Amino acid sequence: MVTRLLYDQRESEKGRFICLRSNCDYILRVRRDLGATGETLDSVKGRCFGCGRMLEESIECKLTGVPDEWSDNCLSIPSTVERRVPLFRPASSYPHFSLGFPHLDSLLRPFAPGFVAVVTGAEAQVVAELATFRAQLPLEVGGLNSTVVFIDGGNRSNPYLFSSFVQQHDLRPGEAMRRITTCRVFTMYQLADLVSKQLVPVAADYAAQLVVISDLLGTFNEPELDEREARRLLNSVEQGVNEVKKNALVLVTLVSPSSYDDTIISLADTAVNLTSADGIVRAELLKHPSKPRTISSFKLDQLLMQEAVH
Image (cartoon, rainbow, N blue to C red; front, side):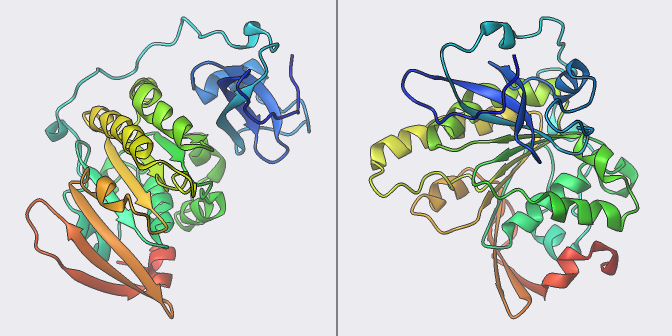
């Protein structure tokens, strides 16, 4: 049974992954695990039952609560899904990855699977969208020729910005969007559960060599949040990140300042803070395994218009 109605999670409801068409919020499938977007497309013949349009450019998944009375027939975990990559690959076996933007590449290198990179500041989301696009490019131009797992922790994903990067390289946005597995979370508990329990198998199923956790602390903003509880959840996040980085590059963004920023930066191999004013971005290297603190400046338009950077 397919329904358009979305529910807030209550104690009597169970957290489930809901696959839906983002433009009309029509629910296509409900699952216990995140699963593969391609399976959902195949199950509905690639077309939304709600608006009748093709789904290839607009399907997404959300972790949210569903009523207990929803049938478990919608929640079966497919037994035919096979992992596409081995559970372990040494970082040295992966190709070199580049953002194609020397001002940031010079700070973040080695920007490779096996590493965790943290980018902080208001412009961090631009880097997240750029990396998500660049990971799909061929190896010979600094890409990973890979799918991407994108966890949207603060509802900040920007498909228009992503499409802009794609179109600058004369690629097809629809095909590029299908290579991204996006999951939005709405609470810090959902984030911790997803990263600690679901992320490793999902990244393996999709053969994703890049995992983006956008605005990781975006849900840790409740005024009555108990610090001990926050630390417990962040410990779970840390465990999940340390596991998934064995087979993938992990990019974490922190958009707004938080009292837990230092905790996340401590997980990083490389960390850069971006601040902008009057169209100029100041990039400060906060952490690196071998480089001292360094500052670089560039125009925001240069970052947004990749074709202008050589």
